[in-house]
Structure formats: structure tokens, C-alpha cells
Length: 440
Figure 1 (cartoon, rainbow, N blue to C red):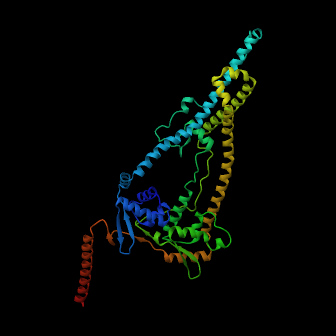
Figure 2 (tube, rainbow, N blue to C red):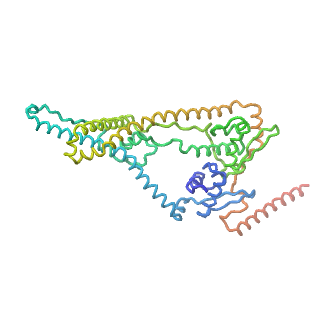
Figure 3 (spheres, rainbow, N blue to C red):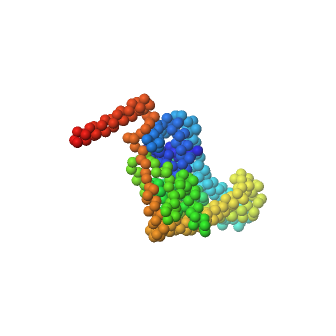
């Protein structure tokens, strides 16, 4: 069964009066799932049913749909609470990589400083004459690269701490470190939903009857050989929206979708795109300055770890003597070195992977755009199929003036109103006949 959230959002966008076809098209859901979801939602919210004289059904939901669901479902309340908690947790996870990088660099710098001071003191005690001129040098590297540490920890301003779809100006440095490492998610995560929503819009904009060439700009691989010639790629579309193939007198095949020809909206403007376009992946949404700062910190961390390793090997005796932070750095040395190396290696590998993915995305977009262009250069057979499709196009709009039954009023009142309507119609016909008779 379709998720309640998806069905609810579709109903709200459609104005709370819908048919099963409207919801299936709006949400891109299979008709069976849409029907089951609407029935469950109608039962939960005590929605009204309007049955037309043709037998088609429209569902009228209350305007406070969300409030009713929240008051009745503890699961929805728990889900909403968990989403808020998860946004905070995910934000903490994102900034943790930057925090670890800074802590690693601080640990390395402090350990190197302590080792350098200890080595310098030991050298002065061993040879006072050589050190009397103050020629000893303490290795105190400045490895802090990037913005002010106080600005790094500045939380998001007036927005919710969700990192998705963030512009560079809104992303703080710690979030930028995560973005530099792992990117900002797949921009085409909803591609399949967009595909089916758009296909349903194309079908509805053509009044429920289409030819295969109108659908191919939104599909993926069409197959080869007989699979493509026999239009096997249309089978999933027919299955999802209960379509029926119809054969023209010349043998062409068009596809009719009766459920999508029924709508509760008198005028619903649908302007689907020419083809399904995948969005290219971005390496990072962080600004160039933030990326350079992250690279600088990562490089300083790696260089510092290598320098620390050299000092730990050369001054092994001092490590045991100093203990504390130096001993901690010694025990975590391979972790520090590995983190510094991975911090630069992971984005480097991901950069080339993003370029490869974008190349494939561009190829797929070009193929679908080419299929859309072919609609401007139709063959005689394709024109014949489109002409035949026009003979099957029809749209049933479920208004409120031709209802056979509705749950909004009592059945007895409806029967009385229906009887009055019939009596009035008979009276009108009798008057017309009487008028004609008198005129004769």
C-alpha cells in the first residue's frame, strides 16, 4: 500500500476533491496502490464519496486532513518527532568530520611541540657551550589554515539545521568539510518518482490516449530488436496505470488509460516537460574558499602526521618519558596518518567518479532529448496512429451537478431531491408538448 504521506500530499495539491486517477497521476503511483491508499485515507478521515450517474467516484476530503491524521495516529506523531531528532543527529554527524580533523591537527601540533621542546632541553643539558648562544631551534609549525575557529562552529542562522539543498553562503565550514569529503547527496534520488509523475501528466494532457513515441522521452533503455519494435517498453506503463492497447484500422497501436480519463477538476493545466532530464552531480556545494580551506587543513594534517612519525621514531626514549599527550599521539599515530591520507584521497577518487557519472548522465539526457525531437519529424504511420488516438480521447469531469449519490447528505434527502428533479423534468416536457399542441 502506498505511503499515507504521499497520498496525503497529492490530495492537498489537488484541492481535497480527487479521483483515483488524479492521485495516481499526481503522485506517479500505480493505480492499485493509489486506490488502496485513497480508500484507507478516506476511512481514516471520514471523507465523503460522490458517485456520478456514470458510476465514477470522486472523494472529498476535509480541509484539516493533516490535523485529523495527527490526532488519530500515534505512528505519524512518532515519525514527525523522529524526523526532527534525525535532522539534529545528522547535522552533528556532518560536522563531526570537521571536528575530528581539527582535533587531529591540534593533537599533532601539540605532540610535535612537546617533543621539540623536550629534545631542545635535553640537548642544552648535554652540551651547554654549544647551546649557550641560543642557537637551539624549537620546531613550532603553524599548521592552522582556514577561517576563524569560532566561525567554524557557528551554527546555522534562522534556518533549520538540515544540510540538504544548502547554498555556499548558508553552509558553515564544518558542514563544508563533510561536503568536500562525501558530497551533498544524489540530485536524482527522486528520478523514478519524477519519471512516473511526468508520464501520467503526458497521458492526462493527451486526454488519456497516447502513442509510444510520446512516452519514450521519459523512459530509460528501450531494448533492441524485436523488444523495441514490438514496444515491449510500454508494458510497465500499461501495468502501472491500467492501460489498454488499441489497434487502428491500419494496424498501428495506441494506448488508452480509462482511469486517467476521469478527473474531478474541470480545468487542470498540465505542462509536462519535453523529456525527462537527469540533473548533473556536483562535487560539492561548498564555496571555493571553503574547499581550499578543507584541502589546506587536510594537507597540514597529513604533513604534520608524517613529521610526527619521524620525530616519534628519532626520539622514542622521550616518548615514554613524556607520556600524556605525546603517548596518546604515539598510540593513535596510524589513525592520525590514515585519517589525514583518507581525507585527501576520498575526495580525489570521488572527483573522478563524479566526472564519470556526469558523462553518463549527459549521454542519457541526450538520448531522451533525441527521442523528443523525433516527435517533430513524424512518419506517415506515426501520424496515422496519432489521428486514431484522437478518436479515442475523452475526459470525464465529475462535477457536482450530475451526482447519483453522495455521502455528504442523508440518503432520504437525496431520494427526495432526485424525485423532485425528475418531476420537474417531466413537467417541463409536458409543458413543451402542450405548447406544441396548442400551436397546432
